[in-house]
Length: 419
Ligand code: ATP
Ligand code: MG
Image (cartoon, rainbow, N blue to C red; front, side):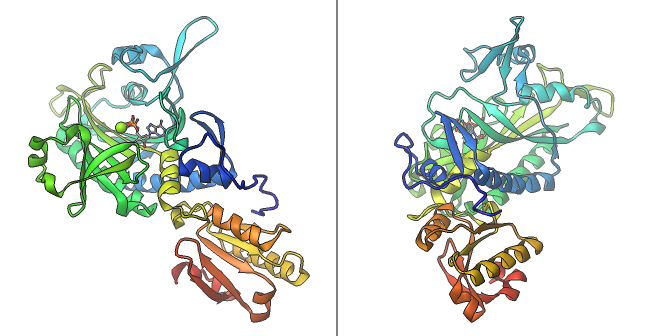
C-alpha cells in the first residue's frame, strides 16, 4: 500500500479523554477511531493488525481440531430463558432491542446458548463427538466501565471456541490442548514471556477456570504470580487452602497488575442439560454433552500489544501482528533517481510476496521517520540518495533499533527477516 493513498493521518497528540497509553498511541497512529465511549472503528492499519492477530489465533485453533463458523449477533430470548440468562437480574450487560411488532431480541454478549441449540441438530450419537467449533464474532456488552480504549469495548471482536465432548476424559484432554494453544498464541504475538496462565474460580462444574493474564502496571486485574513456576492465581482464589493444593507458597507470590487476554472454562452440562443437547452412548443410553468455552478478545489483545510492547516513540508490533511486514521509506522524495529506485523496490518487494507500506509521500524526512516509528511496523527499509550511491539499503528493526545494511538482492531474498 502506498502511504500517499492511506487516508489516515498521524496525530501529534492524543484526545484528552483517552487515558490509556494503548488507546492514545492507536489513535495517534491512525489504527482506531473513537466513535463513542467503548465503541471504536478499525481504520485500515487497525484492521490489518486485527487480521494478523486473527490469523495467528485461527492457525492455533485449527491445529487442535477447531472448525470455524459464524453465529448471529441477533439473539432469540427464548433460547436464553431456558438457561436463565435472559433476565437483566441474571446478566447485567445485555443490549436488548425490539422488532417492529414488539418482540424482544438481544445482541449476543457470548454464544453458548445459540451454539448449543444448533448442535442439537448435529449431535445424536457418541460417534458425532467430539466437536470443537469456533468463530470470530462481534460481541455486545453493556459494560459499566469503558475507559481503557479497545481493552474494554462495548462492541468487540472475540474468538470463542466451544468444545462438545462425550465424557470428562475427552473434555479434559482437549482442555489441556487448548491451554497449550493459548500459550502458543501469546508466544507468537510477542507477549508469551509476560502472559501467565492464572487459576480463577470455576463455577459449578469445576473448581477452576483459567485466565491468561498479561502483566502490566496499567492492567485492571490483580493477580499473584509465582515467577519461577510460571503460574498465577487471581484474587478470588488466592486462599491458603487453594495455594496449598496448587503447591504454591504465599512467600513466593508477587502481587501484580495484569490484563486478561483470554479465558477458558469448563462448562460441564450447564448448557447441554437445559437445552437438551444429549447423545446416545454405545448402549443407546442418553447423556448430556460435556462442554467447555474458550475466549480471546482480539481488540483486547491488540490493545495489550500496544500497551506493553510500545516505547516512547510509539507502537512496536511483533512480526506476527505487524500490519505490514515492511515499511519502505523514501527519504529523498524530491530526487528523481531515489523515486525511481524506491518505486522499483516497492514493486519487487510486493512481487516477492511481502506486504509493504510504502512511504511515497513528499514530506520532510524527520516527519516520515517519526510517523514510521509511531506506526511501529516491524521492519523499516530506508531508500535515499545515499543508499543509491552505495547500493546498500538501511534496514532498521523497530523493536531493537538495530540497523543493518543490505543489497536489494539480499533484501528481496528475505534475508533481513532471518538475520
Ligand atoms: P472481564 O473479566 O475482563 O470483564 P470476562 O471474564 O467477562 O472479561 P469472557 O466472557 O471470558 O470475559 O470473554 C473472553 C475474553 O473476551 C476475555 O478474556 C477478554 O479477552 C475478552 N473480553 C471480554 N470482555 C471484553 C470487552 N468488554 N472488550 C474487549 N474484550 C473483552
Ligand atoms: Mg474475567
